[in-house]
Image (cartoon, rainbow, N blue to C red; front, side, top):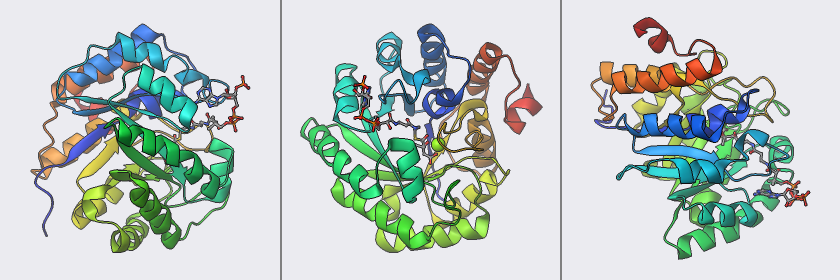
Length: 297
Ligand code: HMG
Ligand code: MG
């Protein structure tokens, strides 16, 4: 069996994690989390989201977070931008990279961004165009790739089609999101096979939530297929406010422990990562969702 020798972890805790917290953190707390994560060796950090504050109040201060962080050279600080309004604010905040986010489920698309899949792609087109003109890279997300809280099963062909459309529109990478963490390894393999029929593997990332405890098993399958980009959130924070029942992302600590054990390099330092874990769980007043963090700490 051959696995990739190196993997890039995309840390989404400051965005996917904090967007779902009942407690609204201060700008100082959010930027300190980003700074601690910047010290770990992580090179990609999703630090905020330029969405409607009525929809996701937790992310309302993302522009202030971007001005408060100490940017480390070599680290890319990205943010979600669902439309031109968000893109322009992100540009003013000097983000390094933006992400558009669509879905493979019509009903989730309506619930999350208030439009159909087709309409969402129309809204993303000018964002991708304007970003590309400014030499900013655009990541795409497809949500509900292994199931939807409103529609149930999602056809792998639908996931492949939306992914291919996003790549053709100009996304350099598409992250496949198991938004509600219902996927299992065989389903993951089947979904990835359909996507990889249409899109080259260097353009595909995976994004597992761990609601049913399947995320590491699913990641193992993705690694077996040769996927080299994995999204994760420190302390297993996370969830989408518009996906009922969704719990946190797979914990960065758990992913790192598994990669280290498999001899796959990610360049992330566990002890420095645990400083970020300790900090954010202290702020939130609870234990990490990460088994590894709990075992080590
Ligand atoms: P809408 O209500 O259809 O849009 O929302 P609108 O254009 O009619 O605007 C409504 C109001 O929002 C207006 O303000 C706009 O100005 C304002 P008003 O006139 O009422 O005062 N507005 C904005 N404000 C700030 N920034 C903006 C912006 N756009 C409009 N960018 C919209 C459409 C997309 C804006 C809304 O549905 C929204 O913000 N949705 C975001 C939902 C979200 O962030 N979900 C979580 C992220 S996705 C996720 O977690 C999944 C992922 O992790 C992958 C996975 O796990 O699968 C990525
Ligand atoms: Mg997510």
